[in-house]
Length: 205
Image (tube, rainbow, N blue to C red):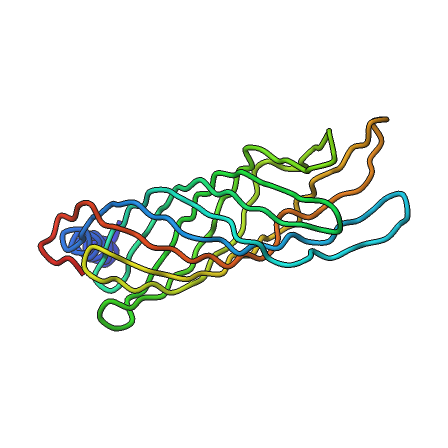
């Protein structure tokens, strides 16, 4: 190995080490509201589609960790989310576990922006008036982008989530035949508030 390459690798190691020495770790709780409208309802019997009747309010509760790296931060979260929506005469409820892993950039003081993948696992689905349902994929991946404001131990933020692929909820009639499907991986607007429990730094911003 050449001496030049050794110097480069040594510089990288010292740079990474200096970042982690300056890092601040914190964790806390979060909760908020979800505005989610499902995708199209495709009815097999009449070969027709219908759009969602509009967003309905859901909610989420969970935990977060935050690793501050100078002007950047890494923020993994885990939360339980409950959403409700309606299409035609169908009321659809979804319970899911979500794990966003976000990379943030501190713009100015307490204000930051972030982006990252969001892993979603559907725990339970319920459609009133339909006895049997089947979800195509319980685990899907989407992306989130948003902004956050830190105010001491408290924080507020807004983000937009979008799925990478469709994830159909299949409606099954009493005869076992596919009656139609609804895309459950649609756009979502999320409002969150958080509270910081602990930080390894005296700086609470």
